[in-house]
Amino acid sequence: MTAYFADFAWLPHGWAANTRIEVSAECTFDVVDEDADGQGASRIGRFVLPGMPNLHSHAFQRAMAGLAERQTNPEDSFWTWRETMYAFASRIGPDDLRAIAAQLYVEMLKAGYTQVCEFHYLHHQPDGKPYADAAAMSLALIEAARETGIGLTLLPTLYMSGGFDGRPLSERQRRFGHDLDGYLRLLEKLRKMEDSTLRIGVALHSLRAVPEEAMRAVLASGVVDSAPIHIHVAEQIGEVQDCLSLRNARPVEWLLDHAPVDPRWCLVHATHMTDEETRRLAETGAVAGLCPTTEANLGDGLFPLKDYLQAGGTLGIGSDSHISVSPVEELRWLEYGQRLSTRHRNIAVSESSNSVGETLWAESVFGGAQAAGMEIGVIEGGDPVAPHAAPRADLVVLDDTSVLLAARNIDAVLDTLLFAGNTNLVRDVMVNGAWAVRDFHHHDEQRIAARYRETVQRLGK
Image 1 (cartoon, rainbow, N blue to C red):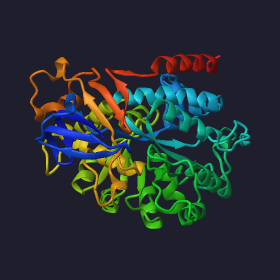
Image 2: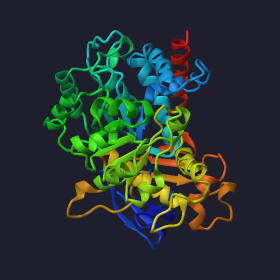
Image 3: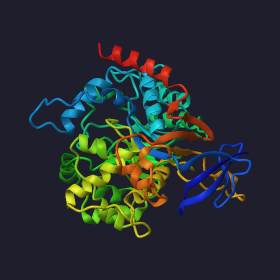
Image 4: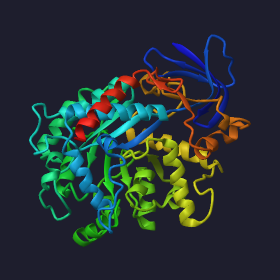
């Protein structure tokens, strides 16, 4: 057991003063006591938070951030951006993916993310033929997570068709594709590797890419059982229109009518919903996976946040295409988008708190942990009756020497974190009981950055 002491720690009920945090030999929270003394414990900081889960990532896209910001068509949209992404993806092999992902995961850790849900569809060689090891690209992501120390929920993605009409995959989509048996074999192989920092889940790329029969077969398979299930849905108006045309229903409406959507599910984006869809999705307990910086970058639209929160909906955040790798910026722009739309301030609040910062942080940590399918995202002691259910020891320590936190009482800390400048306030980060970041530095960041530079320079030639 290792004991730590925080002047203030964010517990399930909010800030608690003089908190003693004991981490077990199994790297879980053993005992968490508030109003305690620090005797025999190492003081780690003034303000301590649970780690933030990142519920949606396409790691390879980190290396193309900034390369799609020149107009190629007066009607540039998600669909023209997608062609640029396809061209970039065609150059990447397993070693490249590991180098890019490791750099990204270092950046995530330094920003306060301690778990990432990797929505992974870059499976095969560019011509669609499997690598000698069909799991090579998945293993590259697992290796990147392990060398950096971040927790990983790997979501191998089923991608079978090029549209709602069932058209074959295009030449640029072939490396994404699986038949049903090959996909289930991949899941079976990867699930044998699960441990305290690795969870294997299921991703259905989208309703346009997974036929109804295939979706039902995956959900009925024994491989899925209690695994988290993620899907892109209703991101673009064009997707909504195609679904209406060919399935006579909107995407979220169709999914809720034809799939057993429950708290295991994460509906990524869900941008374009009616009031009825918003209410129904909230009632399922599923997570709305929101990626505000990517959704803004791609011109997707704005999620109906206020109505969803008022309906009791669960949400989390992801950095998706990684044009930003910061939970602060995701949450800030989640709120700012609503302010611009409604021309009012302080939208994301709850019955229990009128603080936007506290509401967004608490909601996103909870929803992100649910989407990751891991016992994370909370600082609380384990249950002595069921010790296996104790939360993993993940912590984020803020820089209490920063001028941004000067003269701030405890009620203003999370609002200041989200809405006061662009200085990174994350000083130290623990994942699974081990310090991955100390004094703003990852222990292996120089080597990982050097490898990343060499990789992207080679890919750019």
